[in-house]
Amino acid sequence: MDELLQAAYHPENFRKTGHQLIDLLANHLEHVQSGQRPKTIYFDRPDGAFEFWENQLSAESPEKLSSMDFFQEVLNRAIAVHHPNYMGHQVCSVAPEAALAALVDSLLNNGGAVYEMGMVGTPMERAILKKLARKIGFGEEAEGIITSGGTLANLTALLAARQVKAKDQVWESGSNSRLALLVSEEAHYCVDRAARIMGWGSEGIIKIPSDDRFRMRTELLEEYYEQAKAEGKEVIAVVGSACSTSTGSFDDLEAIGQFCQQHQLWFHVDGAHGGAFVFSKQHKELLNGIEMADSVVTDFHKMMMTPSITTALVFKNGRHSYQTFAQKAHYLWSSQTEQEWYNMGKRTFECTKSMMVIKIYRLMHQYGDAFFESYLDQMMALSQRFASMLAAHPAFEMACPPQCNIVCFRVHPHEDEAQNDALNLSIRQALLEEGTFYIVQTNIRGRHYLRVTLINPNTNEQHLAALMGRISELAGIA
Image (cartoon, rainbow, N blue to C red):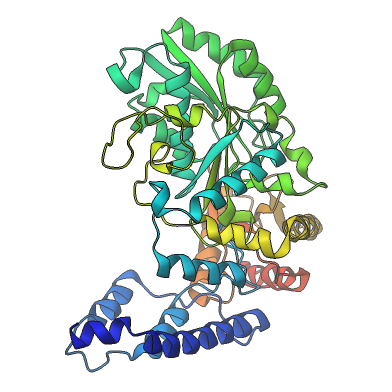
């Protein structure tokens, strides 16, 4: 073996670097969780960041970093999601045990399209999905897959819906029908994207208005369904949000389920964020009716402390999971039509798929269900406390009372709403550039709001009070 390759693959070199890296990561955790690292993000403009990393690729660069300096620079430049002041996107503060499992996955690099490549990950995956299915309220006939994110999982579910419910056999012969689905106007954009990918166009996405708390107005389903039929559309599915991304609002899944049963439509639940609440006895009622669904998506990397990207798609009727991608691939498996749970390529977009399940499996194996329940309940309690703090302050207003750990709020010192919009946008930009707090923004019915996702178990009321204090200073209302 070439000397360079030999050094790259040498176990002792890996051992030495690995030990140093774990120490570096442990120090990072300690520093961000304790506040020794003062900032959540050290913001850099896109061109400046690009110039730095492009320069690092140059062998002649005098500033080329050593091995550990390279990893340290990555840590310095990355958002510290374990920092108590990280309250931004729906990306969790990873439990360290799950990160170690991800390291094992990366080194082993075992795919999962066919059983012999996935002899560890494939049965693990089935065990996790069976467990999740039972939590949802499905029977033992339920099956599913773990895939790369909610966008892909939602698309896969709707492809299955098309295969099962559409009059034409689209997968084999295409379709001349005007297929469509019903979904809340507050649903995640990936549902809209899935319909367009399937060739339904904008007319195939029938958006139901939402109420004052941003939940689908299910009493309008019948009207919109009949109107679609009158226009010659073939509605095959309804998607319920559990919860919506902007405001964390949960649709009435029971009402949607009953409507779908009445009209023999596919009922899909996008529970990418809120599906995890099946693990909380206190908050599972948010998902009442989820057991009526034909398919459910849940992101483990949002509310279950698992590294990205790890998404579960569960079908109530396991046979439906095999109908999505029914095609021949003789070099992968000899039996083209048999429903083999252990050959995952028959049911997934991905042919090469990592052993992503090991991350969530390790957490469940190590800590059990109580671990997730404690985390979920803590995040929900903190969100309600934050809502109370905002409600008690005359200069703050919320878009709606939060149903989960997503809270949308704004300062409104001016009578002119356009001024308030501009002020809230400037506050968010100032926070981003300062870096002490990391929050995001959203536009709700034409108004700009600040948005936090309380997803970090290290965050407490003192951090929220400090956030409100800094926003007040920036707004000139302190």
